[in-house]
Length: 318
Image (cartoon, rainbow, N blue to C red):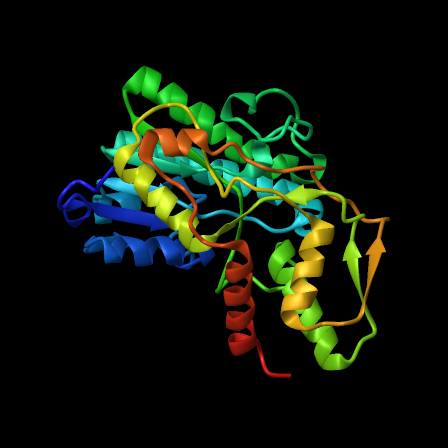
């Protein structure tokens, strides 16, 4: 399914979170496709939790489309410490952005959900139709449910107002320029930093949360950006769509891969007093291929190598 000739050249797009990890990749891709009008709001100028700021932004930019990537987000530790903040920030941002987009005539809204919206226990792979078959994993539930409400809003607004809002569910992302901060990073950047720090310090072991039995699926950030842009151009339906790589790996195997690729040779100590999070995660990606021909391309090992190389080059000097 080829791009419509000149589609992006004619679009005026707001990318919330466009200065973030995924946002930078989306903005790069949009520019590569000829999109000349891309507005990235910064939080110091536009607090997207406030209706007045959202209205000011939309009235100034007059976008055809909003791709909503901005989120308050973090790993298991951050979710445990900030459940109220993650619930409020993500819910209010999304709800007000969609409402003001409708009121001010934005033609299309692309809502980015989260795999944390899925129930804790589900058959693998997760199908979009299973989204409501249980409660999310507890540590991520406030964040996941806040994001899931944007699906409800998207569908309700399409039904009542004919508003074109779509909802995408990317799996766990990784890649160069990821967040490597220990307080809020996700598992891949956290493990890369931990291994390289331990290697540099000559530590004989590193400690990893959980049992290692949980599984995850990981999508390279450039693949995720490509999938979002394909959907933004070609998909115009109410049903949610998974954006994933279609494989799962145990945390234990992931740790082994990262120790090998970083050259860390010490022991792994599993802190089983800490949670594993959701037991298994792997998405059914058939709908994305069926609807707009998206399929992930990046090899996982190669993606990890690129991520590690970027971090080694850019990490703060001790």
